[in-house]
Length: 212
Image (tube, one colour):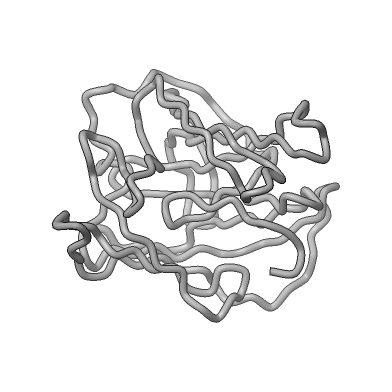
């Protein structure tokens, strides 16, 4: 990537930015629900996203990127545990697919390294470093309030996996926000992705999906 580092979460990228949707908060999400309700990992599920790039002032940047797509492939065995293979294609037009391995562990989605990458626990807080020299780090948390999010496919009631990014260049004093909005029984509806250095962003908005 020529511009900066991406913040990657749940096979679906999360970078940091403030989104500009009109939002409506409603009732808290029940803690009795499953993470699989919000990230269904059945083989054959897929999601397709329109990609739009903006500079740090919110001005649109023209590009010719194809749509981003995320597909759940066959299961695989890693260290005697079954993981779902999740493959992402054409993210910011990168030709090499991103391959991730995820499984549900005690109602947390974890990757093959054992890192928790998604939770619907209201107390969930996870810190991730973005590089070995700590150019930035992100605190991820689950916001258990539903918010109406509008994308080209329609308006959906979503929960939010929020990220607060702190950069070395800011002496780790400024929180730059990211959001990954999930709708129950569908998956990720919208991701607002920041470039770490420039604070420009790439929005990914759902345009089609298949979940079973």
